[in-house]
Image (tube, rainbow, N blue to C red; front, top):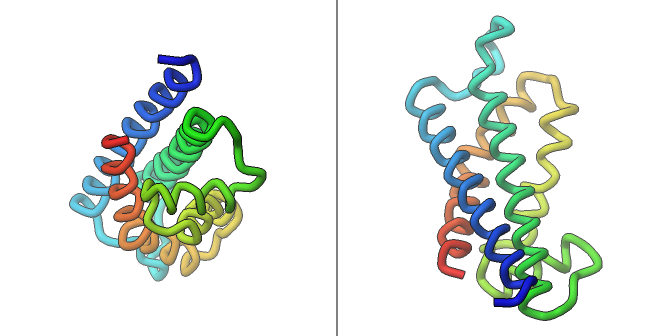
Length: 146
């Protein structure tokens, strides 16, 4: 096994563990609490499970992207110039279902950090639970098989 292959394998394992943490957090969040309700004036402690889910989700996406970069380097001996090109290549390899959806997932970090309106927060957690989470789970299956 070459150094690049070892790097890719290590990053694959990190991505898989990060996805597992998000999955567990997502399942627990959905089972233990109601969807984020923008009409509720939450106490400072009440949104902590949502914050933890968002943090784990962002880390999982970043771990996956790191794996995709190392996988690309090991597989093709080159790296894409942009995240879009990288994700398009991963879509062709069937490691991700949709490059455009992954670009949205990658950009949610900025939205989580900067959007404070309850309606926007509710929308983001709904996207994580219903759209991004399933895509991340599917990528986890593909990564595990890579």
